[in-house]
Amino acid sequence: MLPAIRAEDEYVALLKRLEPWRSAVEEVLRRHGLARAGRSLHLGRTGTYPAVLVGKEHVVKLFGPWWCGTESFEAEAATYDLLTGAELSVPHRLGQGSLDHGWTYLLLEQLRGRDLAAAHPGLDRDTLRSLAGWLGRFCRALHSVPLPATGYLRSSWDQFRTFVAERREEVIVRGSEPPRLPPHLQAQLEDWLPPVETLLDTGRPPVLLHGDLHDHHVLGTTEGGAFRPTGVIDFTDTLVGDPYYELGPLFIHTLRADPQLLGAWLEETNLPSPGALGFPSRALAYTILHEFDPVRRLVNDLEPLPTLDAVAEKLFASCAPA
Image 1 (cartoon, helix red, strand yellow):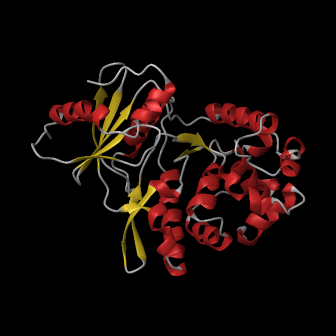
Image 2 (spheres, one colour; image 1 turned 45 degrees about the vertical axis):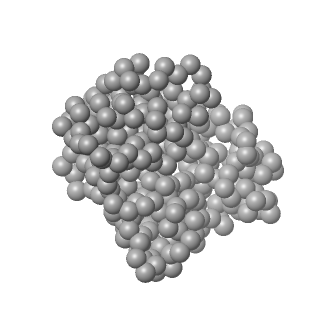
Image 3 (cartoon, rainbow, N blue to C red; image 1 turned 30 degrees about the vertical axis):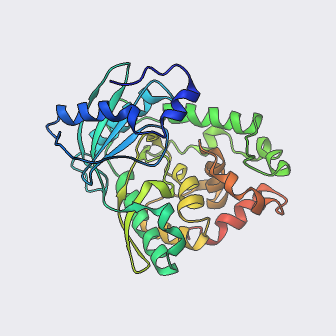
């Protein structure tokens, strides 16, 4: 049913094709009573895992042994467990299960519209500001979802503390390709990044995080230059931790590193006090520590700035909450 993939480059090549996944998708539809002759199948945007669009109603998302597929399935399935009944604009989960060769699947409702990344170039300022406010309200609701005492997404700082410590060591010791920061700023990281225990505010409970709120994960319909969001997708990177961690991809990719748009987001969300670190430093620290290095998108813009404090001031000072 599913291909026995022997090497990573083989997996990468198969992600760009529909045929290797067709029989598995048809089996999922059969299991859930959705098999109908003539239904169109289309491969979604190439990402980490195969996602097949079934007509305009459903999505079958497949997770295998490559690229932490087991963990990603567990994270996304656990997220949908928590979001059942919550008033959030996310796809409804219609089913999940196991296939052969260690693969699993999620059967999801297909949201209307296209991703924000495709729509971005034609959107005016008022539309972007309205979208920023919508995303602020979305994050407020997501971060308010009650967390269980046990399970994959339990209410505990332990996993996030370990994750941040590992990321801190990684960004200090190892560079990235392409570079995440100009060399003179990369050299300042060890002295500038706060210790983990300073960064984490464990005096309050952790919250449920999307983990990768970039513009490919925000869907909406477009008409006459307006973008009307229909929802947020892809919870494979969901984790429990500090809401400041959302800022990296949200600010740089989705809000185009625009402080005024971030200000509109902040007006609608419930970001806690930044504490003694202050908003600019705390926001920049979590942006640098984000798993997917969104800050590298700004590497050329940051070249003229002499220090990381200057970077924090430029990016975040003007929108810091009062």
